[in-house]
Amino acid sequence: MSIDDRRAEETESERVARHQRVRLRRLGLSCISYAMQIALAVVIALLGAVTPMFVAGYAAAQCLIVAIFYVAFRTGLNLRSREPNLTLAQVLAPALPGLVLLYELDSAEAQAALVLTTVVPLLYGTLDLSMGSFIVAVMVYSIGYMVVVFSHGLLHTQDGLLFHNWILLASLTIVMPQIVLLSALINRLRRTLTERNDEVREAMARISVMAVRDHLTGLYNRRWLMEMLDRERTRCQRAPYVFCVGVIDVDHFKRINDTHGHAVGDEVLKRLGRNMADGVREIDSFGRFGGEEFLWIVPATDLDRAMEAAERLRRRAAELVFAGDGGAQFSVTLSIGLAQNDSDRRLRNDMLLRLADAALYEAKEAGRDRVVAAPRDAPVRPVARPRLRERGFD
Image 1 (cartoon, rainbow, N blue to C red):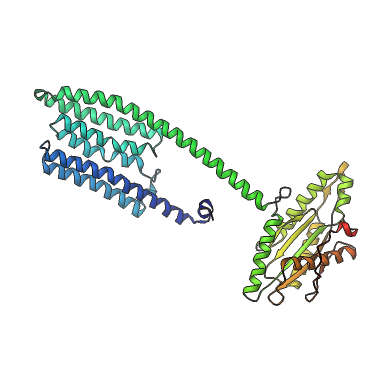
Image 2: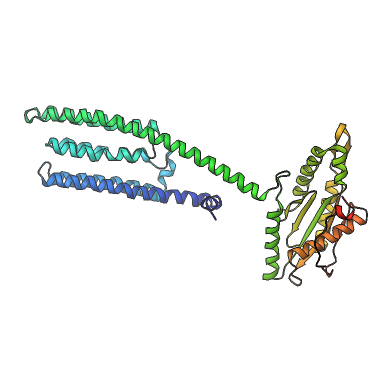
């Protein structure tokens, strides 16, 4: 089973749980960025550019941010948000501790190093944020850095930090637009990839339908029906079980094509097939077996009950009215052959179909528009399944 098939079968709660696990893994990856920033702050403190107590507060703030997002994802609080990933919040949250630490530094080199690492959360945002949200994040970071760096430089003009801070601001002015452009490129690539994935999924869905559906009627095709027949036969081998199959043929279908044309004949098959499909149970398997023949698999049903259901199906089809060539109206009738398989006989599929086909032949010989069931103890002849037209019927 493919990933798409498994996801199609999962419940809503399972889908939410899967997305929550993905969000927790992403949070775990972002912890690497937090840890690197804390490690850099520790190095700066060891070099004497900031007090150790302040770095401890900075580390505590970063850990608190991670803890808040972890609790939100674990408890499902994030699901109340319009953006359950909380990407914008995760990008902006580290900005405040970083700006405070940046303001406390008395070294231009330390400030430059810290700015490089505190910009990293923006890069994570390029993978998930919309362009509008990403521009908001960039503006928050840019304005915050400009305010902190400029005010800090004014307070340290005697140390020459103002000149270095202007250089840092110029660098941010160059770097931030490039990050925005990179985000725009990634967003465009992501949209293109999403569109391609949607196209592939749609194509795969169409292929899956084509593999099991008849191109004309939209009903299940012979291949799918034979798989269902194998499944029913397997049940007979596991425990006491009984099921029936019905081979259904449209009476005088060749005459319909000759009189009204193949387009009308196709319409007859489509309407008639849908009518019969709507008349069977949900647990039944019904589809086009080939030409004007349909196959009906009736699980957990003996021959007597299958006969009653087949009679209802035959009468239901006879009530349909079709418009022929020139506006003439006509109806059609069905001939149905039934056969039973059970745990006592365990007939092979080909043998079971021969029995049903022989019953259909009897229905045709007896005047059509009727249901005939093969006797439960009828012998199965090891001969190939003959075509009805080759035997003089259509």
